[in-house]
Image 1 (tube, rainbow, N blue to C red):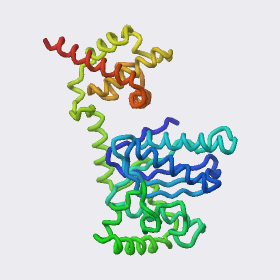
Image 2 (image 1 turned 45 degrees about the horizontal axis):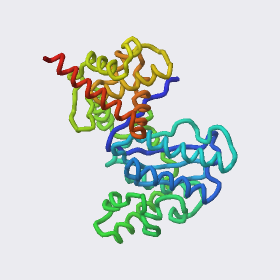
Image 3 (image 1 turned 135 degrees about the horizontal axis):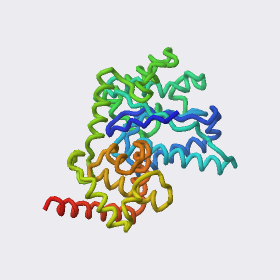
Image 4 (image 1 turned 45 degrees about the vertical axis):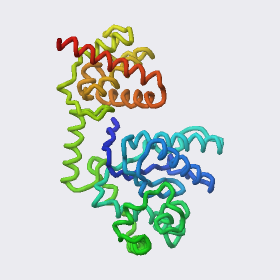
Length: 329
């Protein structure tokens, strides 16, 4: 079965869940829990996002994240890869620690944020590990109540819903969490539209419409919004040919030589910056849309980490603008 593409929306609220492969334990010691939190904190500094709640159980993890500019998938890939490598070294294991891809459910903030923070913090109580959520050391409940410093947890947006004064807000928040102890498992918090969007019908429709708009237009790094109608495929192909020194016949089809893959990724990431949609790039390269998206993500990641890749993309875009000027002359 083909994997569904992730719903990635800047400013979206995501309930992220990852589990041990075969429900195996992924934390065995305090050091393991601390390592995961350190990796999460490190990526929060590098790829900023808002963290509203977390709970690390012995065999699974819950996070409540508001996405900013970087994709949740990219953030979690770094955290989970780092933890898996640590775990396998520490325990001399091989193979997959985690169960497939993590789940990331886009949630309607005003309807579900409070419910999700409470539900996540009550995990250890439902599992009968502790009687009170603040007794569990590896959730953000203690940060909300002021038992520990907030650190990387963004508690203020949630606490402001319970009052303008910190002391009163914490007291009311604690009462709110206590009131949920008898609720048990909340299946409704997992039933998302197409497994990815949780909210009212209007919210789901609006999100799908927004994703459609994003598909038709792309915002480059300088902030301009460029419609696909403004994109010129011929100018981009000529630009990539000029910079790479490779004929356009190598841009098409399923050939997987290293050189061909790199050139296709260069065309795709440059094309997105120039305003091309995934559909247009799929038609230009002869690749399906999901492959184009994967190639784009791979090239974007490389751009963040490799100066040479960034310079090459910038050269293509400069050449693309020159070609546009020539065609319009």
